[in-house]
Amino acid sequence: MKVRDKVLLITGAGSGIGREVARNVISKGARVAGIDLAPQSLEGTGALAGDTRLFAGFVADITKRDAVEALPELVIQRFGGIDGVINNAGVIQPFRRLADLEYPAIERVLNVNLYGTLFVTKAFLPYLLKRPEAHIVNVSSMGGFVPVPGQTIYCAAKAAVKLMTEGLAAELLTTNVRVSVVLPGAVATNIRTNSGAGGPAAERGNESSKAMPAADAAEIIVHGIERDAASIFVGRDAVFMDKLARLAPCFAARAIGKKMSALLPV
Image (cartoon, rainbow, N blue to C red; front, side, top):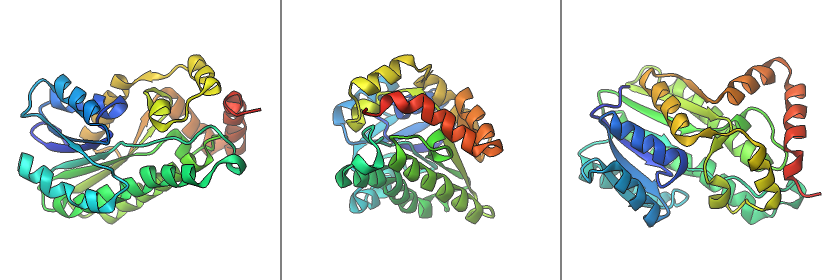
């Protein structure tokens, strides 16, 4: 689906990949309804858009089903329709082993990454089915197909998003709605800070990583949307690990485990 003249909803639009995708599609002629918990962050994205006719921010908690179900009518009132949904909002867990991870952290990661994506998808799907063409994009992760020690629940949530998206794509094959799953590797965003998962160990791991700029990730994602790609891999690391995990899953898991071991408490 070409994004020109389309109205797109983007969750997590206040920063990181979400903000850069908003900027990218607006530059290509789209209008954006941005969803985020942080009003000031949404205002910042709106300022970058440069035209109030092209971007509208909606403060909402995607883990609250009632709030999400009110969004379609609000977006339609503002823009006259909705052509695509990009479920980008996500959080990681504190860098801890499963045995040491407390239930509130587990529930938050599942609620934002899995249930938030599910709520938004279900709320907007009936409206998308009425459009001449439409697109749903769900952001999973490289962690959705290869395990990352210290991020076990995050990986579980993103794996669920991946398979949910693939199942939805199969269900919608005979409709006007195309579906894509995004599988990013390391991207330079503030997800650690926003997730409350920082700390010295995490910062050391971040310093040594070669993360892709969020603007470059956004360009890959939008290009994938415009060619109706079923899977959109973001970064050479994601492409490489996908191939390695298919050929030698145990070796891939050990390689990731060794690389990420520095992020775990001793």
